[in-house]
Structures are given as structure tokens and as C-alpha cells.
Length: 145
Image (cartoon, rainbow, N blue to C red):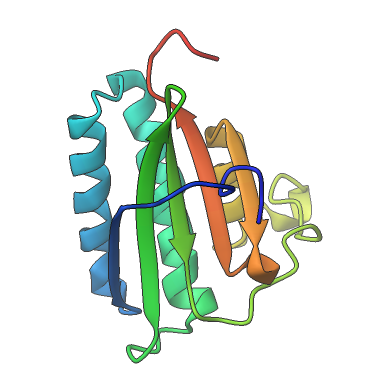
């Protein structure tokens, strides 16, 4: 387990089939979580983009749009941060050796920015289970950096 998930209980969670339209379920949970825990509006956009990228990757790349496989999205709040977990039932991927989306030869490609965006927008990102589980932490308040 990574440092973010150690002793962390994600009591608020949903499981849903790996279908593209279920990204709306993820967006709804993100909205509810941010509202319930008074996440500063300046943080909301980063959270929404990073989480929808992670859920989209779980649906399309992890579970390969197989509706018999589940995606799990959960969150917890600890030490002034909201921590999200996204998990799929796929084999994972090599998250340490991804093409650089800022490389000129990759700029025109329609895919390959998700992990880059997650790392840029979240305060902390951890991968477990060979990449089938990603945990991201975001400050709740605007002043925290």
C-alpha cells in the first residue's frame, strides 16, 4: 500500500460497470464530495479534471469497456486534504514509463495526457496494483500549497 492509502478507509465509495456513460456517476460523486466538505472553488476544477481522467482511463484502458468489470471511486478526508481512490479490474500498466505528452512528436496524439494531468493537478498521486489503483490527494482550502 502507498502512503496515501495506508490506514485510510474510503467509506464514501461507488462501484459501477465499465461503460463510458458512467463517467457521469463519477462526476456526481465528485460534486457531492466537494460540496459536502467545502472544497474551495479554486480546487474544484483540478479535482474534476484529474478524477475524470482517472475514471476514463479505468473504464477504457483498465477494464477495456467491459461492462462485466467494475470501476471503484471512493474518497476520504484527512488532515485538510480530500483523497480520492480510483480502481479498475484490469492488469495495470507501466505508469513510470509513459511517453511525454509535451514532446513535440506526441502533441498531436489524441491520447496520452491523463497520467500527466493527474500528476500536474493533484498534490500527490500514487499508483498501486501495477497501476490498476490510483490515489490522488488535493488540499481542501485555497491557501494550502
